[in-house]
Length: 356
Image 1 (cartoon, one colour):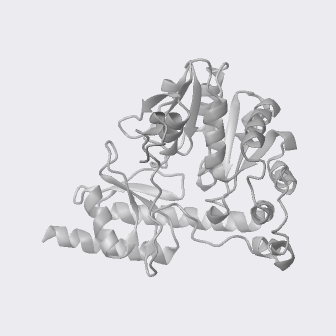
Image 2 (tube, rainbow, N blue to C red):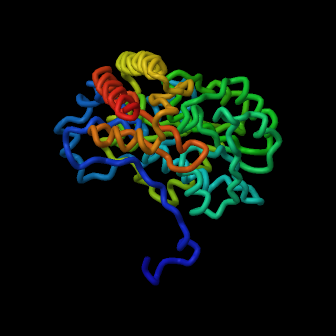
C-alpha cells in the first residue's frame, strides 16, 4: 500500500470475486452467471443507431428502465431506483441507512460484500450466525436496534426464508429498515415485493445479473417506499448521476419486458438444478435445499478444498469458501444440462480416485 492511503483503510479486506478465467475450454460454474444468453429483444434494442449515440450522456433518470420495472411489479415509478449492479445499491444503503448507533445486522456467512461495506462505511457490523443446518434463523432478527439486511435466498447456501418469516421480521422492527437482497429470488423463492404496500420499513434489492442474463451490463434495482427511494436517489445524484450507461438502460428495459424468455430460461435452470441435486445426492453428497441458481454441497469422502482443486484440474470451475462453518462445501452454479453431466462424470472419477 502507498503512504498516502488513509489509515482507516489500511486493514481493509476487499471482496474477492470468483475467478474470471483468461483461457478457453473451461466449464465455468463458479460465479452464478446464467448459462443462457440474454433475451433476443436485448440484442434488438442495442442496434447500430443506439451505439452511434455513445458520445452522449445517458438519461440520469433512467426513465425507460424505471418504467419497465414499475410496470412489471405493479408499483409506482417513484418506488424504484436503479444502480450499477445491485452492489452499488447495497453500497448506497450502507452509506445512507445507518441509524444513530451505526448498527447493521446481517447473517454470517452471507454475501461477502456486506462485511466489506460495513468496514468501508464505518458501520458497527453485527454478524448473526446461521443455525447448525446453515439456515437464517428469523427469530434472531426480531426487535433489533439497527438496519437489517438479509439475502433471500441466502448466499452461499441457497436456502430461503418464507414470506411469513420475513413479515414477522418486518413487524417486529418497525423502527428499523429491513433490506431484503433478492438476487436469486427468481429461482424458487417468493419475492416480498407485495409487502411494499404494507410496510414502509422494507427495501427490496434485485439484480439483472442472474435470472435476466445481464451480468456483464451491471444493472441492479431497488424497490421501496417513496421516501426511502428518494433517500437512495439523493445518494446516487451526490455520487454518480450517470451511473448506468445508455446501452445498459436499453438492455435491461428490454429484458424486463420479455417475460416469456425470462420464464423459459429460469424454469430450465430450476429443472436442471433439481435433477443435478438428486444425482449428486445419489453418489453420496449432502446437498442443501436450494432456491437459487446454484447448489451448496459437501462430501464425506472429499474435503471442500480437495473437491474444488480436483474439479479445477479437470477444467471445471466451482467456488470454495475456506472459512468455517462452510469450508467443507463447494458452491456449484447451475449451467446447461451438458455442463452438469460433465461435472457429475468428473465427480465420480474423483471419488473413485480417493477410494483406491
